[in-house]
Length: 169
Image 1: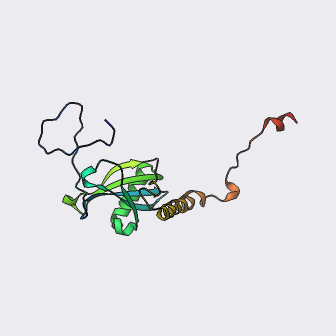
Image 2 (image 1 turned 30 degrees about the horizontal axis):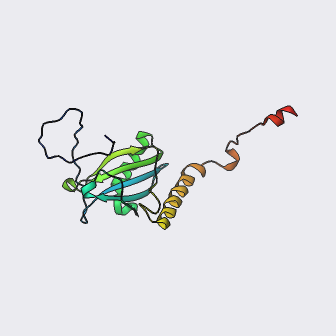
Image 3 (image 1 turned 120 degrees about the vertical axis):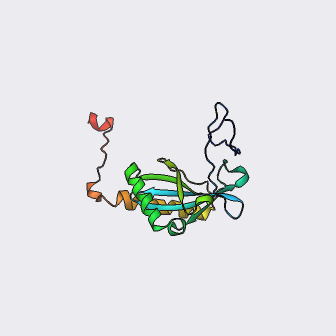
């Protein structure tokens, strides 16, 4: 079984050995899709927020469409503060969070996954090529602000490579 294989079952039911059961988060939208909120963290900031959509009939499959959105449209200021606080406490200075909103308990947001190895949507497949360039630009600028701009160039250690030719002369 792949890690994204899943099925929705109606409970109560008798658990079968070898299976894991989890509560279904009802994150369907009005268009018949399920919507995840992929939240990128860079340094101490929410650098990018994307809505990721999949068919409600195939909710455990790959993302079908990615839309970059404004952080304030996805989260309240209080939620943004809690997200940044969580990442500081967790030690995540670069990564992504998957956050869902359960229609049954809205406006509560539910953190379901923390990724310390961020991935990008597939250009031309999940996101338009022009939006993909914007996606990369936003993350690159955030990375530079958070990690490069904090250290003057004169203080950045430069690796010294000594080739065998230099040693022989």
